[in-house]
Length: 182
Image (tube, rainbow, N blue to C red; front, top):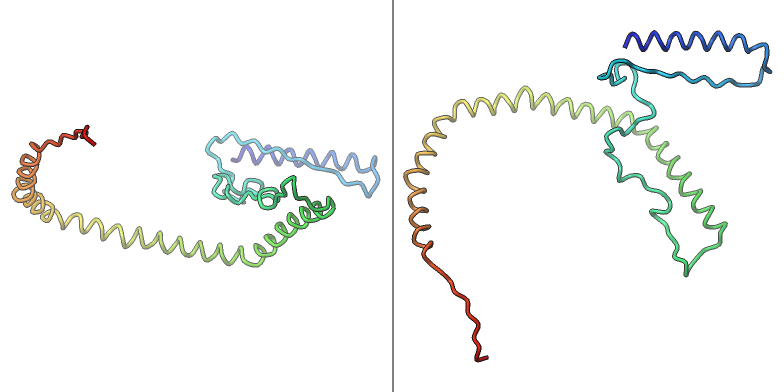
């Protein structure tokens, strides 16, 4: 991670020097595009140490079912069509409203919902680690005698009964024959 950071710092310094050199050659209103290439030599690096990934927001494809486009929702068959301008405006309004309403709702609710989800998962993890698993282990340790008694009951009472029933019913055969007279 340190090597990658040093490489990025060097690239940023070179970009700043190049930007200073080109300042005299271009008009003041012109903007310069800066691209930074981060290459990590650490194969196991997740880049989540200091900041979340901005471009990869669903790396595991959890929400693949939400990739809905206008054509997935609204489709006109060839026999019935609206005016071309109506179709174009409908498409544009669908996409813009879907995007901006989502952004507005996420602006208002994303932080509180993620806080609540974080608290919920923290509580569930705490309960699982510190309450449920110790109770399960306590039961497993103290229930060894129940396992022994239950196994003995099955071997003494239940197993011979079902073995006898199986031997009695095992000799039953059923033959199916077609009646030719009908």
